[in-house]
Image (tube, rainbow over all chains, first blue to last red; front, side):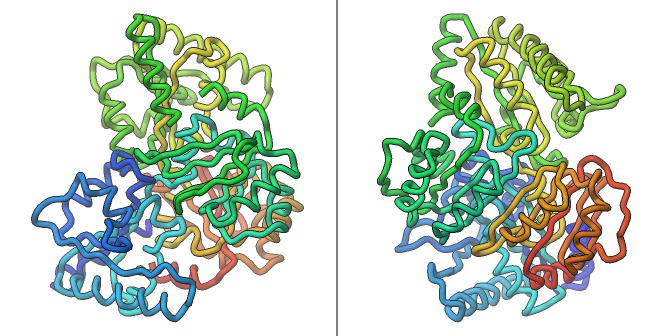
Length: 261
Length: 261
């Protein structure tokens, strides 16, 4: 088991007084109670808690989710990950964040990094972990999975995301007309992540294909800010927050079930 | 929020002494600590805990996962869901299970149904919930999401499942040669669920495409029985358990990172 191998390796390093562990924890989609018991326990034990810094002085999402569990003696380490696409700027940010985490690890202090959703699913944690491993290939890294947003959105809608032999496609954003047709030819269920910037385009495609009644948008799933829009017939335009996704199902019966939710 | 609407509706029904709530809880992929705090709390409060019965007198998977949390006064309700594909047999089983759950609900006793992984992700819970709603459209159903196996497998491997603009395809089984080529033309990452019965066929396709080094198989992720096979070059044949999945990545760097795990 990769995780256990790493933990043993950490144990040996710590025994030599050399190195602590970086543990990535997926803290779930928004509701603080949707963290796992394991993630919560590791959070309680943590000396240093790192997370993506919020924008404009506000709390970051992961920081917000774990706020109820904060303990006074814990060190909070906000890390800057700019919202840009330029590889140079991003790589410098990951490198700087890795240096900050590495400073604690070399002092023998364990660091946990918390990420909204799951740490292996489109998470900044992966870039941080890679930058740290480039810095020092002996670093012990552990990963605790979490609930990702498509599952949370389906739960909030009260419908199955997938059933039986459904093929599921997850499209993370930046998609275009041809992509929509290609994925729809292949999948029974499609999740369009971060749909905000392309919602209008997707809505028109759904209308052309007569699929508006088989789709739902969920923003901020499981949080007090949660919004649900379905069917999409009456929503040609929506001003959506960043954490919004659209789910499209091929089979109508699922939405018949949904309409009773 | 669908869940809250339902809870209010339940509250009203319970106030009238009529009906309790069915709550589906995704208890995670195998490690009992990977249940969510919310799922764990609802489990503690439950009067009746339903789950898919195990085969040949053995404990079911979800029952096994929640065993550490069992309390003496709780009623355990194993429900029979046969492992067959015949729609008639399945529908009779779902109907019978719904009748059993309904009997408790009409007594005002809340029932939780526990499912390994997540309840919206290829789960028997969806069929039970649909059968209950057919029986009585007023039934209040709540859903608590959980960690699904692809996320758990990625965590065990110590690699990101998806990054950046990766398109993710999840194929639930029963796939054929053409399906492999079609999904690979579309996605950057593919998860083949329940790969046991088609492993040999998938292995040969991966070999033809020169993809064996970019794939990993994980069985029983996060449990003491966990097994990891990667790269697949040396595994043309594998006798795998039911809970085995294969992950295939388009980008080699991810697996270079993985090899350091």
